[in-house]
Length: 320
Image 1 (cartoon, rainbow, N blue to C red):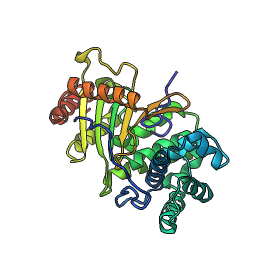
Image 2: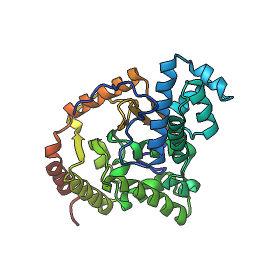
Image 3: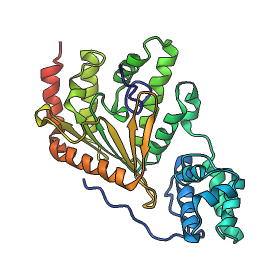
């Protein structure tokens, strides 16, 4: 069976500091920087509501009852995974003892702004709901670290390579659908050109580069694009060679994302055939962060990547 490889594949696509952060009151919402991205706003508002709830010693169950919902709904709201109804936010602020009108207006306005549509909504015909969460997290992250074993990471794929990968899982689709999927993949990459572009740290297994996706010409273009990417200050690429043998990421590809607000938990993203896992519990994140650190130690140093890719071009994909 062929995996969907959603973040990086067929459907679309240093040291790790400890978590921390101090007390923030309703009158002092966390800094969202210059971003007006709805996902960022939802995450910031959710973190603020969590702090207010915990400060009052109120359980998620009680908060869920107050808005005629459930404990799990409160959890999703606090993680910024769902939209916010202004009525729900107002009811929670009352429960949490926020009575100052200015403080309430600030957070309710944040809820309203966080419900603005994202750019990827226009790709709804080729974009499953569960993947939208990943695109939102990716757009909001300040640091993205990935290990890839089968494909070049989606944020670094060329159009030719992306098209070849998408065809593996959607060979029977109409040409218009294939092109929309490619366009979605390429539009994701625009976040790397923004003034607030995230730091990208990718560890790519040698297997992903020796698998001739799309043929020699496509692979030559892709490897040349990776060589160019190594020159960008916000992108670090390491290659994990076959000679390393076994390594701690035997379970497969994963991505760790970190966000501007220290109070927001890191999120680990793991693709599956028909969905994805999003892990944010401290023990889970720490395990994957430690695995990533070990991979970075075992992989070739980033300053050698361009030369190694040049060697691969000459030996595996020579010019005809």
